[in-house]
Length: 125
Image: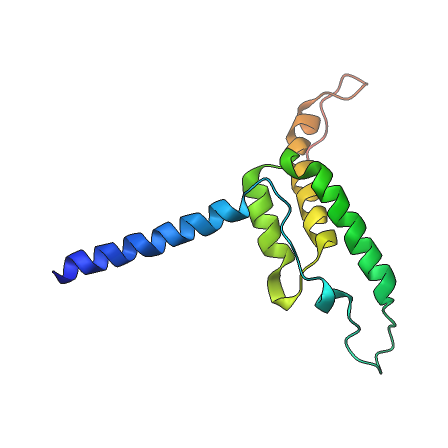
């Protein structure tokens, strides 16, 4: 009987985990709370954060994500959403930067395999 309860519990946990991953991979930009990201850390901080400019940057990044979200692989969307929301802050700028870097890196081997215009293969470092 105990074995049955344990396996049922494990199934419930795994199903919940799978559902949370599926929800994150939906072709919809997640809603992030950028308030902590755009709020100055302290009044005495030597670096002055322009909260209005920060919010404008975050909104512009979100608008870009809305246009491009479905073009990014689901696995990248999940990984980058997790990275962009770590540490108690969230940022659309970090999210789109992560997605763009992953896309760039995914395209690198194609570029590296092509011979240069001189006909020589690229040098390996």
